[in-house]
Image (spheres, rainbow, N blue to C red):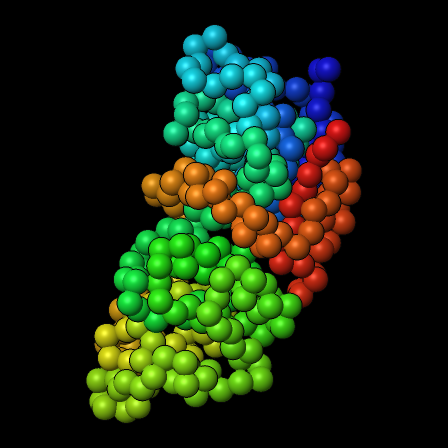
Length: 341
């Protein structure tokens, strides 16, 4: 086989399943047969834009930075990796450029070249008992774990997660595995809130139907802000939604000394004047500086719990349908493209 199939951006809103050259691994590389690759918001951004933005327009972009698969070939100088190993990949460690987000390699393909293959840095083995679709959650669950690490909650604290998408659900799982006493998930979609309860949330709030402040006070008790105004006794918040209403709600409900970790990308300006009344500490959370393979053992141990995050698995042959689902608001939570041939 001299070629393979791979997914790249097409016209705005579309993807193309194209034939490209089969990668040839060098002595320090590993060739992975990709079995599953998740779709995330970064992928949909590039698809909506029609590719990677350039000064002269846009260029087609190889997609996929959440791959999991099986080792097909191992370079002679690679240590500790064997043909047949199930692996996940660090897309940020590729020397030729970020996998699926601007570099020449994409993880939504039949094969993926892992350059300078090194266990614990560029790739990691996964228990074969874990379905490939669940293993592909390794990268987004690292994002979620970093957000929780930035928030640094204690076991006795009460935490609110805004957004019951994949990152918010992942953060909920990490918070409960960490032993956090009470975790509330806030969203506007009943099916996502139901999933939040399934993965371990202690309570959920539909912010389109309920008064968030009143509900949190009922759940967490009463406290005050710096001015002595009544507020819920919630200790910390995590924003995995990226909506302006989230920051408005946090500023309106935060008690004195509360913390907020922002994992989501905000695309609209927000008013932060309310931080004065609560002395709110806002913590940015970006990517996974150290967490990319910290998550892998627990993902394997609790894979059935993490599997609930996946709403759809779609064959590689139907990549356009997978992206149509991911691009349609409310149609899907987590879409994973799979190749089981």
